[in-house]
Length: 277
Image (cartoon, rainbow, N blue to C red):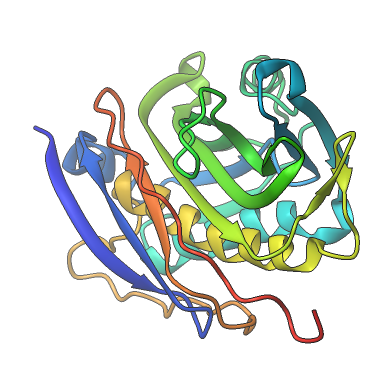
């Protein structure tokens, strides 16, 4: 049975992230099946950013990608997920595995040849979401930076994170036990893209910090929606490892959704520019 929920999560000193949405996951069933079992975390995201420029008309739209493995998002996403799962004390082992796929459909095929023996797999991939910042018909997807301008004036930028988590059983041909999605978007104070589109290295720092905060919030939301954050009854729970301190930002409003119910988009709020900008 679905239930509307809202709560506030504190992420180190990075600020508060407000999450709201509707969950339909059968948590008791999932928890009973996973307790004492092994799980492997796999992500198709983190090395590439989706770049979009929304112009005055559809003919002014531009799309591109930026290869940013040195930004550490893949490591952050996987590490944060592993730490959340370990902290629950529910699993006999929690590990990561690396695949070459960068899309969910490709990953599902590659998982059939996964050499790492594991009872379950938590696959994190990109999701589609609506444009909660400007309300354009072109929504957000995965990790990325979007920018909008009107007649080449009033250029505005936003960083966005839209994720999907699939909890699967490899031994039964990838049977899915549960799935959840989360989407966040947040304005950044300076134009983060140049025409092309390509990253504006002079202004990209604010977008990078915004994405770091949103990834932590999104991971926590996915794990919570699937019921994997809670320890089994009577089990001792290890403390959750805190991420490194990040520059203070304003609250991020996130849209949370667990299929088949879709929650409304909520616009994110602005964050201050990094020191020296």
